[in-house]
Image (tube, rainbow, N blue to C red; front, side, top):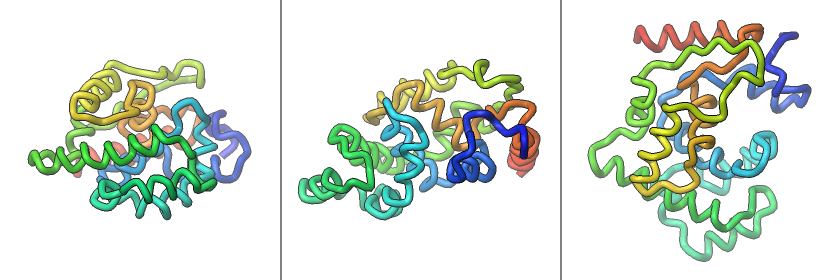
Amino acid sequence: MTERCAWAGNDPLYVHYHDTEWGVPTDDARTLFEFLVLEGAQAGLSWITVLRKRERYRAVFDGFDPERVVRYDDAKKAELLADPGIIRNRAKIDAAILNARAWLDLLDAGIDPAAWLWGFVDGRPVQNAFAALAEIPATTPQSDAMSKALKTRGFKFVGSTICYALMQAAGMTNDHVVACPRHREVADLARLRSRA
């Protein structure tokens, strides 16, 4: 891939993420919760910073199992704040725990969180055709709506920019530039998903 999206650069971790995961449609609830937590952790930072800490996050956040995360007490929070392998920000750690509660509240209300999130794009990935990185928006009306709905449901660190980043990561929108080989590959995956 010589014309991949410019943001992937040359960092092997970033390149692998771009080439195998970013933009691939997923409705796996655990993956979506992970993206929700990690995109919130990214606020004010670069995604590569979070990506380099992702495996540690998976370990200390119990595989992003909301049933476990919701039970984190002050001792666990102190442990997380002392862990240099993650982003040690009290507000972001508190938000992850609050978001686990809000996620489980959706389930308790009979709402499938994955289907609910996908509902903001009517269940189908948005296929964009951007020629350059500069054309890709930071927010969209769909991410605005998702952000507002998440906040209403008690979620934290879910501004529209964070929501749009989640939508890009989870394949709710295909924002690979058209010259990138992954644009067509992800579009093909989206078509398969739509037919399923």
